[in-house]
Amino acid sequence: MSAIELLEGPLWQISLGIFVVFGLWRLFVILTTGRTPVQARPVGSVGLGAARAIVGHFVPRRAFFGQGRVWFVTIAGYAFHLGLFALLFFAAPHVAFLRDHILGFDWPVLPRWGFIVAAQFAFAGLLALWVRRFVDPVVRLITRPDDHIATGLTFLVMLSGCTALGEQSAVLRGIHLGTVEAWLIYFPFSSLMHTFTWPLSRGFTGALAGRRGTRM
Image (cartoon, rainbow, N blue to C red; front, side, top):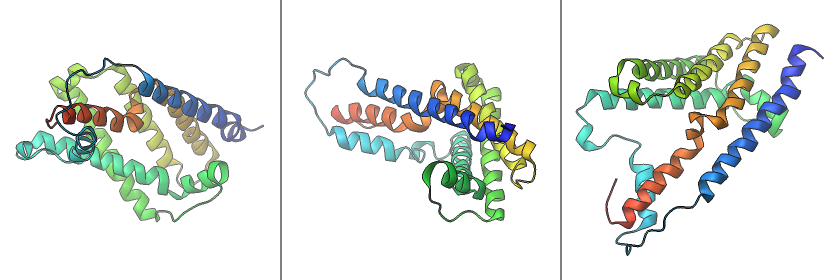
C-alpha cells in the first residue's frame, strides 16, 4: 500500500470517524447537560429571543457602527468564513473527493479564478484575525494555546491545499491529506467545535433574554 493509498484509505476513515463520533458526543453532552431551572414567570418569548439572538448578531449593533475595530473583526470574520466555506464545498478537487469517498454525487464547482479569489479572502481574513490575537491586549489575554493550534492547523490545511491544487504532485497531495486528517482529529476536542455550537450558545443566551423580556 502506497502512502497516498494509506492516507486516502485507513487514515482517512480513522480521522473522519474520530471527527464524527467525538463531534456528536460533544454535541450530545451539550444538549443533555442539566441546568438550574428558571423559577421566574416568563415575561417574553423564548423562541423569539433565541431567533433574534442568532440572526441579529450577524451585523454589528448600530451603537458600534462608528468603531473601526468592530468593522475590522466583522469584515475579516466574513472574509475568512465565507472564503473557507467556498473552498471546502466548491473547489473542484474537494467536490470530486466528496463524490468519490462520501456522497456519491457532485455539484457545480468554482472556476479556477473563483478558487483563487476565495482563497485570498480566506487567507486575508484568517491572518488578520490571528495577528489580532497577538496585538490586541484584551484578545491576547483571553486567547488560549488551543486557539493558536486550531488557527495554525487551519492555516496549514489551506496552504497545503493551495500548493496541491494542480494535483500534479503526489507528495503535495499527500501533505494536504495528512494536514486535513490531523485537523479532523483535533477538531472535536478544540475551539473549532464552534462551527457547530455557535447557534446553540447564541440561541440559548437569547432564549434566556427573551424569557425575561429583554434583548441581547
